[in-house]
Length: 296
Image 1 (cartoon, rainbow, N blue to C red):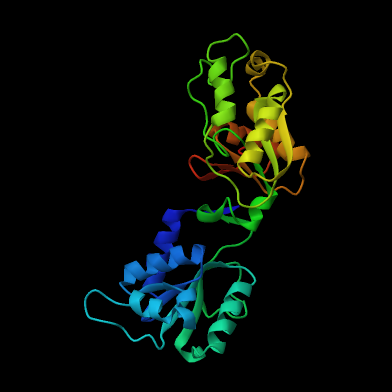
Image 2 (image 1 turned 90 degrees about the vertical axis):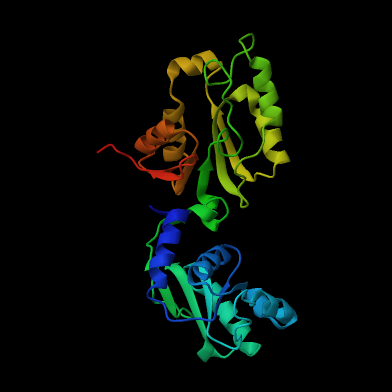
């Protein structure tokens, strides 16, 4: 799996800039295209706007945003780069190309581009920076793109903040130190990375007896999922003795959803175990790193 981080996006845009012709402004396609447009605009010291600012009702906003602090206002009647971060089929670029052409922006003075493409042979695409083959993920939308729908998500440390105050680094059993803090954590823990699309499943090492608390928290925070997999052990002591957190998650990843493309895991050691069992990639969320199986 190809995984592109923020730092790689910046490096690629800087290198790409040296090969691009001159433009008077860059117009980003929200949401992710605006990030790429801002990086390029700042690097080239040219104005950055949204494609929505090119629409007639926002013409005053466009004029204001195209003001350069030193040297007055640039011409806004052409030489504009319309930019998205990635392009698959080209549908979004073609849609904006049609809209802007219909309202009077000349084709000859507009260039439609994408930083990353799966293939350069896309209708509506004029130029691009780099080909990134499928499967691929981008750090900036890994929780929000359509591909996240095929993901399995760890809970503590991914969907919500992890706990780090317990004696065993795990939830305690009744009567053990900090059990009351664990109950409070399940009810009041802050959300961390909430996917904005429905996902296949949440896979957690929390004990089955805490399913009501997990379901309640997920519902309150708008996590849409098909299934919730929880630990098979009766007590936290049994689970600690088995020490099979990553192994058990890996079995779910391997056996329950054959079409699943990515597991989102909070712990790097478990991420490696999951990848080894499932023989499929795992995203270690804390380090934003793709972990692959290291077993032959």
